[in-house]
Length: 405
Image (cartoon, rainbow, N blue to C red; front, top):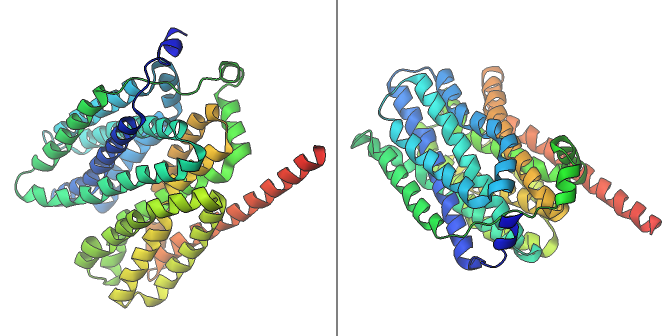
């Protein structure tokens, strides 16, 4: 209990804390965004098959999923700061080890560790931001968080160019970034999540998961949705382009970055809009429009300019799903259950990131033309149905509560 009482006296400057946390995420996004293409290029040039390359990339998400159930306890016990610092140190060291020994399983293990470390950083920062922001600013603050991750993730792939100079260079740059982040982090005072002792002790982990699902199952799905789309685009689309004769240079230099770029433009406006008119309306609207967008792509694929425009619009619509999902979750569940909900979102993001490319790859073999668009459209249609169902459920609940009152 002692730490609980001490930390109330020394509060962090909220503005400094917020920007340091946003910076953390920028760097975590940067290391993830860099590793995907840089390692793919290095594996490809050492003659590894594309299937094995995909498995190696999946290691990051396996790491995210594996650590998820175990993150909550240390954060509740030791506070946010030590967990974030541990994550940064793990990322920094792993990055420097990559170029030293280029063996498939060694890299697989390192990526697993980076996935674990990135999740330590994300989980702690997400909850720290969610619990210290007021509900009317939550959408806005979490959208900036999403924006920071997206910017890092977008800049990361440009490090592929540095490989031409020296194989160590991209890894050194990313590692130095982690060290800088660590420096800023050391100036923050440690804080702890809201501990509701009675509820935390009464509800074991399984009961907490059940409670979150009961209260907010739909708010967990945008994480899945976002992982599915992003990994399908980055993992399958280059392969799809090669099969269907779309120019690969155009895909990697324009199409894929345009999705990320589109998502950066609208993060903040959509976050603010969701503060004003409610998250569920915004989420359902975005999913419906995104569905129309991807489905239309299958008909206009032959025109590069229309395809590019639709990719930008799709990014603008769907790039904010993850941060809006977390904000919606924070609206629906009590603060003491938010860490549990965040863990579940991270797991679903990982599952989505692994399912997307598998379904996409299977459809590319099976259908060929239009496969990727059908894969993403079908998933979005299922999400839309889920969202409408959840709204009906909430309406029923409020009705029965009114009647009871």
